[in-house]
Length: 99
Image (cartoon, rainbow, N blue to C red; front, side, top):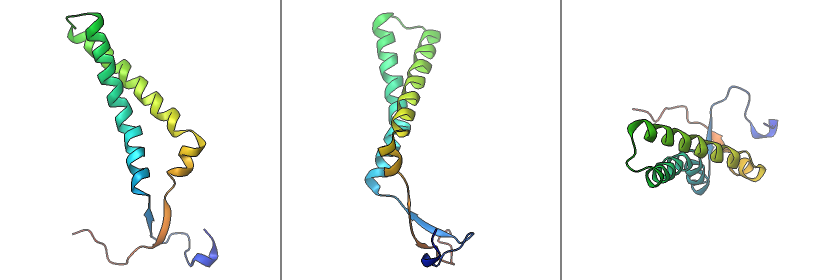
């Protein structure tokens, strides 16, 4: 934070993030694990019909882990990290908007 911005440590600020970037981050964090679960359950069902409850749980956990790993790797890329950094828009209002 530069002194020219008029902000000091401890000041409350308003942060902004481009809506498209927020949507993309949401898809990486929530969408990839969900897709991983669905794909792994579909693959499990195709490989071992009928799918027992225990097998479905194992497939779902494996898909969740794969989706989380893929999302984390995507978010760690440099271009992805710079895209999801919020900007300081200005000083926060003294009056809270929360009712």
